[in-house]
Length: 371
Image 1 (cartoon, rainbow, N blue to C red):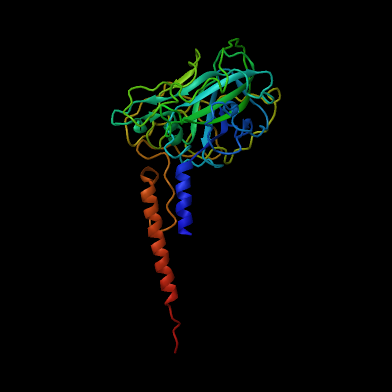
Image 2: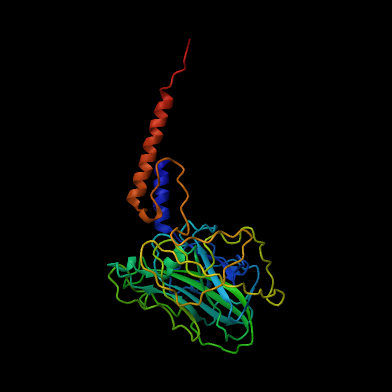
C-alpha cells in the first residue's frame, strides 16, 4: 500500500494540472454556469490543435453570464473539483503568465472559438531581487496559486455590447526551453455584454497566434532572468495589466477573499443574457496584501469589489497568513507545501510505513491474560 501511495504521490507532483472552473461578476459568485468545462485538467501542448481555442471537447455551458461594460470579472482556477484555498490553484511549480482574451461572436452559446480574440488582461513576470533564477521570480500563476485560484480585471468600459467568448489562459513554463515545451490551460466562458460602448478590436486566431518557439513560449525560466516577453498580441487600449506580487499564500488587495466561494450562497440560474439581470456592483472593501517571503508590489489592475457571502470569513490580519494547511492525519507531520519535494515525500511515507510495521508487530505479539 505504501508503494502505491509513493507512486501516487509522484504522479501528483508530476501532473499537478488545473482547469479554469468558476467566474465572478462584481464580487458575485456565478460559479460555473457560463463555463465550458474541459473534460480533464491536462494541458494543451499541440500548436496545430484547435484545442488552443477553448480546450479539448469542453462540455456545453449551462448558459450565458451577463456583464455590463466596465464590470469586474474574476476568473477562478483549481486543480480539482473543489475550491479550497489551502491548496495551490495550479500546483507543481507551473510558473508562467496568466492571460485573458475576448472574442465577439453572434451567439456565445453556439460559437466554436474559431473567430478572433483580443487580449484584455495579462499578468506576466517581475524580477525578484532575491532570486538567482526565474523559477523564484514573481509570476502570474504564483498570484493565481496563492490568491485562492482567483485573478480579476475589468471588462473594457467602452466595449460594444453583444455576445462574447471570454478565453482565460494560464501558461506553465516549467518544462519549456528554446525548443518549446510550454503548457497551456484554457477555458472559454460565455458572456453577454451590455452598455452603450462602441469599441471593437482586431484580434488573433488560435492556434495560429502561438508557436512552440514563439516569444515567451520557447523560453526557459530556469536561468537568471532580466526580461520576459509575454506571449500573444499586445494588450488592447484600456486593457488591464497586473504586476505579479505574491511568492507565497496571501491575498491580492481588492480580490475575492481567500474563502471557499459559493458555499452558503444560492447557485445562480443559467439563463440567457436577455432574461438575466445584471447585478449592482457591491462597494469595494479593500483588504490587506499578505506575503511572508518577499517584498510586494501593488498590481496595476484596478482593485475590485469583495464578493457577498452569507457566511463571510473574517478579514485576515496583517501578520497572519491568509490560509493555513490542515493538520496531518498522523502524528508524523507531512512535508508542508513549501518544502514538498520528492525526497521529503518519500521519507515521510517511509516513516509512516515503519510506524505501521511496529504497530502490526505489537498486535501480533499480544497475549490474552489468563488466570
